[in-house]
Image 1 (cartoon, helix red, strand yellow):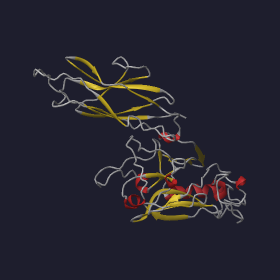
Image 2 (cartoon, helix red, strand yellow):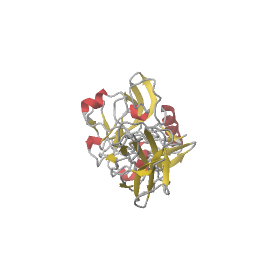
Image 3 (cartoon, one colour):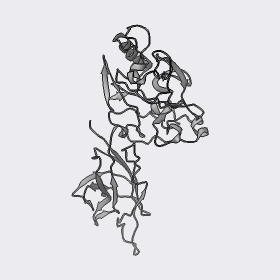
Length: 341
């Protein structure tokens, strides 16, 4: 499975005249603000690299951007990204996991080649949290991811903010994520605004894409198609091919609260997950920001609105054998799976 890592860099160039009033000589100075933002569960690099001098705009005959390499002191002989303008933004794709890179801003004009200070960063192990395709299984005419989404940028590299405060979470109308219980050792949950790529409060701004290239968040109808396939193909816990008793076949084999209910997810968990869907009981975040039901629930968004501020979703529960369809406020925090386009 191909790993994809992203480095977003904001490069700001300006220039100044020398002490005798001669034309601008470009000698950019590199400063960093969160040059890398790498967590244990994310291989996405959200770098902000600023180059600042004063007073003059960058003229049209100036070539600028940045260079990077796995060797120190990269030059224009190495990998070069050219971007024009005073404020420039670019994205590097396809960086190798577990690799150290060196990056410098550059600027070239009639006075020569100039480089900013060097920044060193090391990519982590990669994996699904970098936003590239997740492990998946084909069910009939559909292909579903079988691990929860965990990336923290939209498809174009725009960050999705982490929101820990309950009051702030409840008031959001834009995308956000959090760890369950704000604990970095636990899985990520997303509000529906993130799932739909609503990244700002301007209704005229196009939405971002949340899913990786080639995938999308399932509609309510696509969830139903999956459920009907599993039922028809004998994934009910009792082997029947009618009625909804497929929760054990979709649930992970560990982590659930125990249950004595016949056919329930939490009853003899070693019999779970015959379908390979591997739904994990990570719990959810209520619309008011509170956390709920770790060990008891696996809740997954659909992309389908019911009315106004509520959306259809699926909920596996440790005490049930079925996978009912519910609806919840868009500010709730749930897990996410994807379906192949």
